[in-house]
Amino acid sequence: MLDKLFADSTSETLAKGLDAVGIRHRVIADNIANVETPGFTRSDVVFEERLREALRSRGEDASERVQNVTPEVRADRTSPARADGNNVSIDKEMAAMVKNTLEYEALTQLINLKGSMLRAAITEGRR
Image (cartoon, rainbow, N blue to C red):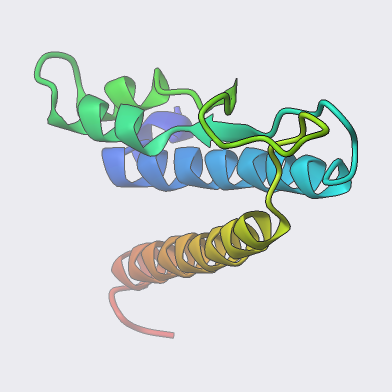
């Protein structure tokens, strides 16, 4: 019952975003760990475009549409490979890791802000 009380589209979107950031962090770490592995194909996470489509679409409740969006790990077959068949660029992966970390920090700040707003509404601004 409380799930429905706090299950608005903003909360669902932030939670799904955190899920995607966590998965992306593991994928980037795997790419970095295999930077010298011959024949290794880097992977990436597809999420933001799917989320954007779900938020733009009409029909069922927005929080339900967001719940149905899941991050997908895909092999990157478009990046150029080195002579050993590996297509991981350490510079690209490190930049992706920094970006992902910033996204995590932004999402956690937004979740904390939403919690603070709920707390203020419940206590009517009193401490």
